[in-house]
Length: 458
Image 1 (cartoon, one colour):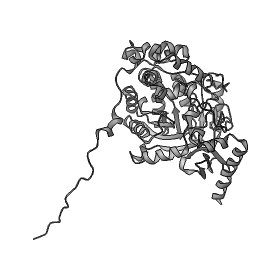
Image 2 (cartoon, rainbow, N blue to C red; image 1 turned 60 degrees about the horizontal axis):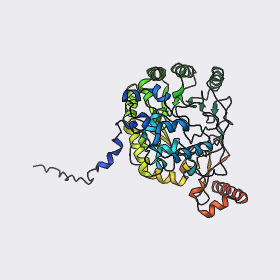
Image 3 (cartoon, helix red, strand yellow; image 1 turned 30 degrees about the vertical axis):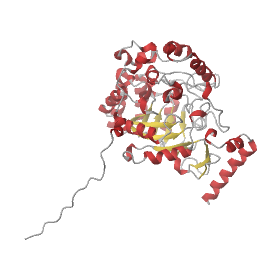
Image 4 (cartoon, one colour; image 1 turned 180 degrees about the horizontal axis):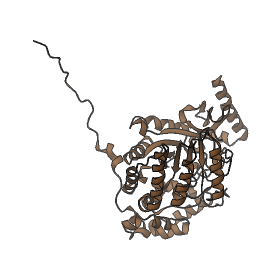
């Protein structure tokens, strides 16, 4: 008689999941906009109309006063007025975003932080800030086309967006002139576009084109399709990405601007038939931006086979804790948006209050990694100031956490050069802040960091 193998008793070691672990699935689907006085009587049908959203976007503090009424104090409006005077970006905020802001506590609200500057919380710029910190214009062979990476180019067909983010890295060109910045305007121009297409066609190494701006949301349907068709017709172009903040700030467009969504779909479908990749890149920074309306919009893109990836900016008070970032990453996955990058905040003028350190990024990434599938886990990167391109935040050659100076190399982009990132002064000790106020000490700290980076490479 055969002896049957002994089957070990199966023991379940993992305890039941607490209900709080599913918070990422809880999408707001109420008529949240009605808490704003000017929108109190707005129906859901009207609020879902992209034309209504665009028409009622706020572009002046006077309009903000009309919209909010006595929902906030007069002092708040004065604070915003002061903030705008020192801002590199002009003001434009959609009703969708205004409806999601917690007006009972606007100073700490993560959406207010991103779109409405307040003078009382502004901090002095780091002495190493530069208006075009990524040197996009320096790497532009023709206006509005940046060719930095060997096989990729950034095409900026226009300089308008559905909203204007305070922290825009392209504040040198995007939006209206402000008291702080006279812009390098890149208005939509067929002649300028032709020069970009000619350059792309002349460089057989260019396979990957990012269409940004400004924002692809602001292209007319015919313009979006024209750009897509022209690029797909260039033999060396294998991949293209339409970049837009739109799904995060005005998801209604995908639902009600049928012409635009259909144009995008046709370009994606044609690319697929040509065995070329066309995707949409977007920009969510906080989980509260993702609502039931967002899911409806993303479901529509999913049904049409359109891949959506997300690029987040790490910001103080917005998403700079492991819990906040994990919630965002999981919620993005829930609505079929792939978390792609988390950027350590660029060295942008006028928004020092939003910047965090490289150390913060490293700490958060350690906690986010492992919470979900690897393909839905973003890479934390530093877009190296001076045009070094995106570097894994961990890949520094040297990082002095006391002075806040980190040094990166980009051997495949600009070999032999070093690129420096600088942590915000407010996260340094008082002693180090005083050193940064002394030009002699500044030169020493920078030289010392470069010396140690070179020593490490020997």
